[in-house]
Image 1 (tube, one colour):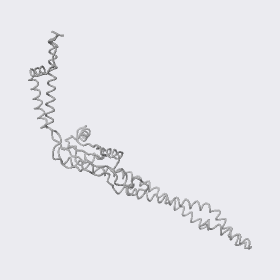
Image 2 (cartoon, rainbow, N blue to C red):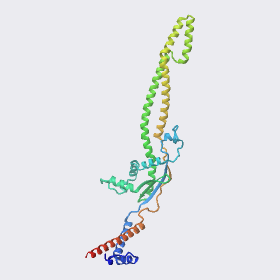
Image 3 (spheres, one colour):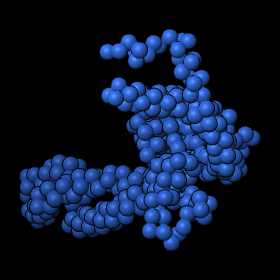
Image 4 (cartoon, one colour):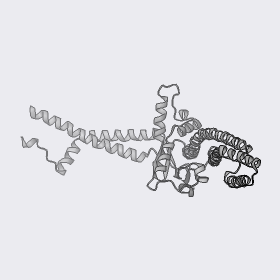
Length: 338
């Protein structure tokens, strides 16, 4: 290879090379500077507001306040664990909360989305994801961050998202509670009907003279044999008839008493379930502890004009140098072929 065509990468040669090609580099850099300044001035600034909260233990109102033999219900104020945090994150990203925010703040109009467009929902989803985000902090809290052109709107949206969290969970629980209520109600009336039937059967058996088998059998047997020994045949026959009724209905009577005890116990359990379901449908328990409430920011978050201009100009400067080197290398290659 010809040594004259070999480029020596010394500092002096690099400086000479750049100086020889200074005007293309300067022109590209200046153009990038001017364009980046214009773009930074044209971009609408956005303000960032955020709210931070800790989830509580994810449980229903009835379990938190009325639950029996429930270890987690002993501490209603306990902060949520990782599983609870993940569940809350899913609810924050749900269509329920998104729909509430979209409706309240008319985000189609706010984000200047054409409602006649076939891609309006796609565009809304993209804008929503760009401006509203949720993240788990290192201390197991959740941060809701909102970017908006209006600082007050950014704060309002962040606080409303946190507020809608309890409403979303309550609506989910109420929907389940309503279904549970209907099931419990149906079972309750069935048990009540069964108890009424058992009581009617017991009253029928008692009308036959059977009312306390354990305490009846002994005295009746003793009276029967006493009447037989004494030759009181008529009295003995009456006692024998009573003993026969006890023998006939005694087993059924005992079985009905056991059934009545079981059904009464079931009735008590259903009453407890009724109380729990009623609380779940009527009451809302907070599922969060707000640490930082969102406030309207004083300074814009984006764009950072100085950084944008510096990065753009520096990138253009480096790219122009690379471009000049490539062009010079191509020229040298053609000279070598000649």
